[in-house]
Amino acid sequence: MKKAKENSAAPTSGPQKIRIDGKEREFDIENPTLPSWVEERKLTAGGYPYDKKMNSDEYDAMLEQLQIELVKAQAWLQSTGKRVMALFEGRDAAGKGGTIFVLHQYMNPRTARNVALTKPTEPERGQWYFQRYVEHFPTSGEFVTFDRSWYNRAGVEPVMGFCTPQQHEQFLDETPHFERMICNEGIHFFKFWLNIGQETQLERFHDRRYSPLKSWKFSPIDIAGITKWDDYTKARDTMFKRTHKQFAPWIIVRANDKRRARLAVMRRILLSLPYDGRDLGILGKEDKKIIGEGPSFLKE
Image (cartoon, rainbow, N blue to C red; front, side):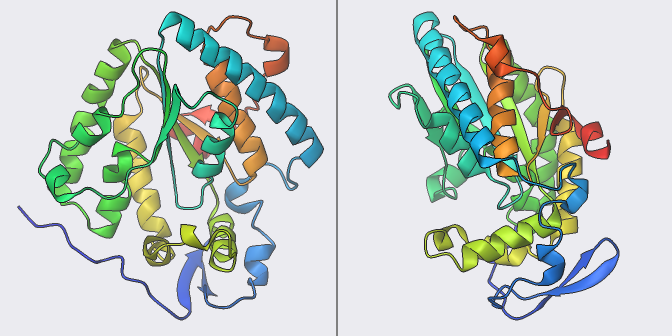
């Protein structure tokens, strides 16, 4: 078996050649001035359907109402013993962490927790691939989110050479069987993919690079991935094709506007749970421009 490459995510420096919409562009993360071609399309990149962010006052009001509903849902989980597990996947800087934060913000941390695992330890590398994730699954009454999950093996690992082609193929073959067992166990299971445009990602990388509060989020993997957009797209599409199933569908959220994306995620979870006191008038209807299921949604 071919051995996975190591240290292939070493940082690069200087201008990077990037191909966007058939045009070659130059992007330098070390330049404190954001290129105009990024600034102009940071919201509408990738065919995003809105050209303005959601109004902050409207967002804050809706966010509070949905968070109240989440507190109700958590009480229902605790009284019934039901379990919720939600995976959050997407490209680097897609907004996973912020979305998870608003989900958990007012929930009781004793039974609502987030899992964000570091790279595998030496003992973990010798385990069954899914083993280190299974030990974090929810028990009775728990609401558990994963900030990245076993799907690392469908994206980052094959693109950056951290797994072999054989390991990647085995993962794609086994994952639907693994997730069917999760659903058969009665866990309310969600798989969210936060989808962003290329210029949106570059703008967020730039923001992280020059923010004293966010610089810790900017990693060598981010730097190395700047020129691998197409590779990640190919890996994502293969992942969708092989692991999008009726019993465990990929829920895709267009996330160039973080505010709309966060509300869309919260609304989908709440509309899917039959908790006591659910206020459908507050939840409203989903924005079909923002949220859908499966790879076909990205082509709409």
